[in-house]
Amino acid sequence: MTDSKQMEKTERIGYDEYFMKIAYVVSERASCYRRKVGAVIVKDNHILTTGYNGAPSGIKDSFEHGNCLRDVLNIPSGKDKHICRGVHAEQNAIIQGAKFGVELRGGTVYCTHGSCVVCAKILINAGIKRFVSCAERKENDYIELFEEAGVEFVQIPKPSMEIDHLDYRK
Image (tube, rainbow, N blue to C red; front, side):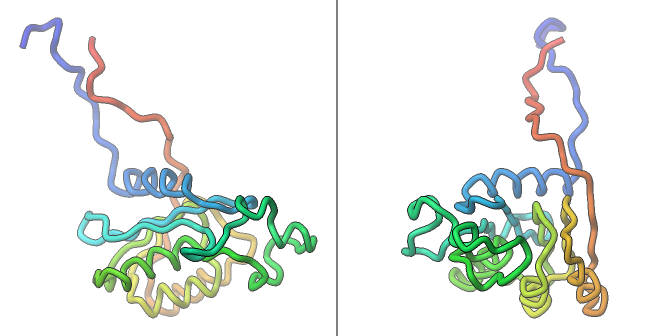
């Protein structure tokens, strides 16, 4: 390769940033008007499953209905969570593991948002050992559950969504 065509050497991003960027891409499939959430479950630096928030398979989602039932009923964020068609991203990632026989025990969850308490309990029972997120949640009682269960909770800054291609030239 000649000097003029030599690639500029760039540093690689770390695994936490890498998998979190992927979780944000996964969140683009979410079908929720209020919040788009993505989750990726990883073990030994390999992606096992992904999930995003939305209605169960075969059920009309908020976009198909043209509204959010919680908005129609004027339900504030964090209240009456059962009045929602959506399945949370973490739940969908675990469901994918169960559906396809993927062992998740000992894995790490990368999630664009903090966990709700229900998801935290499900993650604990699935044997997840690490939860990485960029965003806090108003209700942060999930952190206490993780701590008691021995699940490491890590909060990192939101990664740059810019893609650093390796084809930059000097």
